Length: 451
Image (tube, rainbow, N blue to C red; front, top):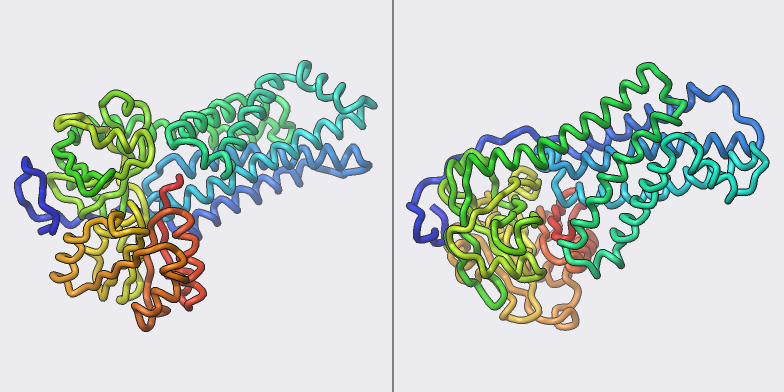
């Protein structure tokens, strides 16, 4: 039984215990990526007999950076392909950080590839850099496509930079980011036409396999599977319930929801069949444990998409991709658990607070009392399970160092396992303060809304 009142159209029912699906751990995934990169370096090494002179060194650098860029591009797409083992084992938040870091690395490697190849060829041919660049672009096979791909990648890198990202809505960033797929497709032919290191043997077969497998997985998990699930579960909006100014809880009803195997703390990407909401799928966390007959999400009007959700009418069709995320009880190792949330970040913590075992304390951080969510629900859950709820309300100057404030509330803070969710600045501050207070890095789990 849940502590949240179900929508009026749902009948009470016991939640089915979900069977835990496969999950790939972060160490294994990073190891696999590193092994592939070493394989690329080995491929370059075996095809390089000797390097002499400035032209040879520059051309060699251009070859290896080109190979590494060609390998990194599909890997970055796979990180965000919404593969269930990665989403559950690594977590969408960590995958997004890896993807962002890898994207910056890819832009740097592509830039280095262009500069070193043009410079090396210019020295070999006795031309200036500009003349050599024009020669390569207009007379080498597949180079016009590769040039467009490079410009698209550089442009995507610019709009993904933190300063630019803060000025863009999620929807605008999402659509601009789609240029990455076109860039990877345009660059593929260039790699095969000019990439002498690939040859005609096993290396070329492996390269084809990597790209075709990436395309197949992207197509399945980003397009086909969500369409099939949409037809099977037929989710619709049952109720939109106001929680506080600018915040609503959204109840979705559907068929066979237990087959989704969702867990408290996870999120779905929701796409609504309503004007202005049909073409972008935004991430929203479950704000109550999943129920066989309904799912509850709590949404704050932070952008155009989330603000429009409050105006949805019952009966609106919903396409839901998920569940995603490793911010669940499966990562719990300690009996003493601290949940720290702020703003709409309290939503997955509210679901965890109801279900995660052990001695659980929830701390909600807010600037003013009006920003606190679920006060009545949290108090009821705490009473029923014997947990504790604290509220840290006020400005940063009033509350002081977050780690110190938490240590006052929880003696033995260093012995807790911590789940963090909220705005990026708050989560960063909390993580630093907790580590300074003695909480081990591996015991701090984060969920972010910046991906």
